[in-house]
Length: 272
Image (cartoon, rainbow, N blue to C red; front, side):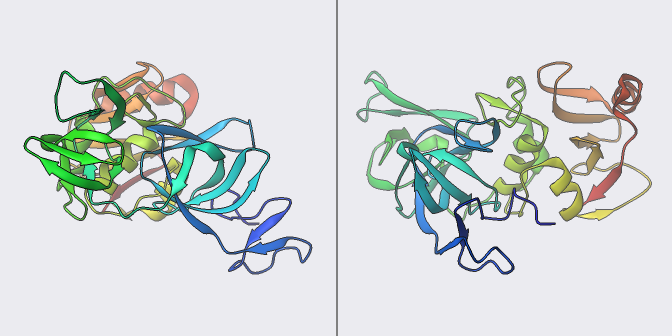
């Protein structure tokens, strides 16, 4: 059975490249577009629950625009869902990405000018001009120190995840405003140039190789419905519902706590 999270087909349309879908569905070639909101909930159904979030500049293929919602597939991880149609705009090639936990896009190249948007780590921006300490983008003027050129990756996923310490826990969250366990892992690994699915079960299935023995920095520990990054042989870093935040936690104590609260043992220890 196909997984609706990565299979672009609903009750009316299906992506033209899909095989084995109902002949009654209209076959559609996706139209490339990009997110034009700081954060947009990717919904399971129009007006339905949030499954994930997309950030400013994330590229999607839109297969349908129906009653105010667009049926899309995100290019960064293949995740499928619905966005408000007014959260999308024409595709523009990104030149920079936000490499600080968050930044502001200002109305002018002046820190005292009105801030138009708060942009989260990982947001993709298109530069229009450069003015001293600011880069003018389609979102506004962004401090140069908070940006990196597209293609310039970071090196240490754990260091990236540490930028999110204290971020509130949010189910399905992918931003500095709120993030969940798999969103934290995805932000960390994408920023370091590694492909990374969106949900923890997908990450467990597709990322790295299973290992046994000593824990190393950058390893991933999986439980049913949860994932954490190993900081060192005594510490993990994860977004979790106990603390309702991204926190460091003693590794062995966390393993015992999670099992004692009824969520079971570690299901996989993986390393890229």
